[in-house]
Length: 134
Image (cartoon, one colour):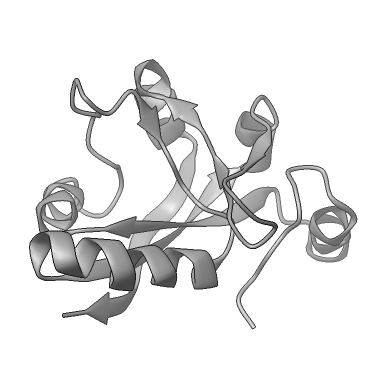
């Protein structure tokens, strides 16, 4: 099963960090083709700045939730949906609470657009595309 955590400080997340020495949290982001092209332009190292009508960046905590959004929202809206996976420094994410977006399976972080530069700087490694839907 995909690497999950119930919240930024949850027991499962702490156990993973304690057992592996891992100081990152795995997140997913469903994207359409336009956003993916911008991520690719960054050499898979950063998400693009938010547009004026997008004041919040929403990375999600499970691959299943990202799949649902990519398949059910991105495909109808833009013809394709992609699921990205990436690692973010745990100490950076600790300043944000995990938000419940309508159910326990729908958990995400709400990162203000003005924090995107710092969020991108907290990404460790590359952003990977794990799933594609058309």
